[in-house]
Amino acid sequence: MLKKLIEIGQLISSSLEMDVIIEHTLQSLKEVVGAKWCALGLRDKETGEMVLKGSLGPGKELPGKAERMPAEGTILEEVLKTAQPLIVEDLAEYDRSLRLPYYSKEIRSAAVVPVQARGKILGALIVCTPFLRHWEENEVGYLSIIASQVGLAIENAQLYESLREYYMSVVKALAAALEAKDKYTQGHSLRVAWWAKAVAGEMGLSDKEQEMVYIGGLLHDIGKVGVREYILLKTSELTPAEQKEIQSHPGVGAKILEPANLPKEVVEAVLYHHEDYDGGGYPEGIAGEKIPLLARIIRVVDSYDAMMSDRPYRKAFSQKWVIEELRRCSGKQFDPAVVEAMIKVLERDKSTCIELGGECRPDSELGGLE
Image (cartoon, rainbow, N blue to C red; front, side, top):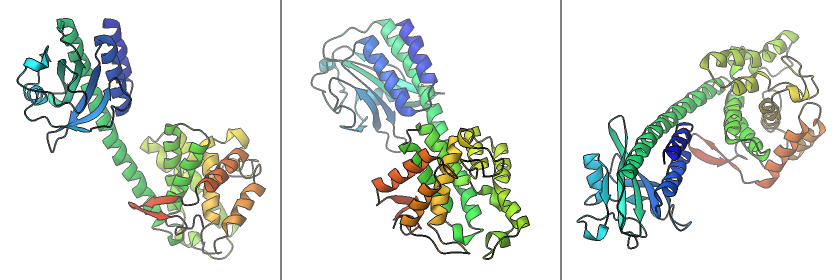
């Protein structure tokens, strides 16, 4: 039991993902205590109900069958009020029920332990057996320690999620501020971010890498805030000096993002998203695998969206022409593997929607699929 306690403590504290924390906790309880059914519920701050966040039992259908467990008049209410564990060896002789969402008739014994963090009651761990059971003191102690650990882990996960949401809102605000400067590129950064994430998923990249390439896509042109507006909106050919100023935007963007402590992969994706696979790009002229993969992805989807959109100096091209151009430049400007993944994404779902400002619109309206 002590070995398992140390193990589960390490697992819980090593994750900021709520689902992972709950899964590890319940699996540990089921193995160590020998319970038939165990669950973790968190308190709804508004209604006071217990919201079932996870459960393990004899059937695969258990999670998701019922999400809410009314606490009023039940053992759960007593535990939430007293903040103390409540052990019931025989539910048939107890004056309050558990009102479990399923298998309640089969359950005879239960241990309910409050999940707390820094003096706040977050919810409860519920462990049940289908037979009468005498709960040993060390078992109750084990449950209490696990509940304390999972409470802190859940609070950290909730804090992380709120910080992440705030962080993403700031990222989107930066992208929106950039696009307000150039009416021809409105929606471009969000489309690039969406396509980049889709391509990364097609290539088998991890969820973390997909999130980073999404953020990189949102911010890939942030350095253009340092480019004079008349250059961005110019309809005639750029002079060498103007071209040089435009080509400075990846480096400027990286310098803007570095003080914000963004992941290194995001900053590199912004810095190198105009490098060509054959070494002919900028700012450093690196080639092939030396270009970070996230930058190679953004290079392709950025070009795709740019060719599919109107610009001050030309009208949008057809999707058929754009795909042919991507293939023609594969191995030159673009990583061939990224090009193939992009084409697969395009072919797989031609009714793809992109969410902008909370509204989902067909991206044919956004300069995307026709």
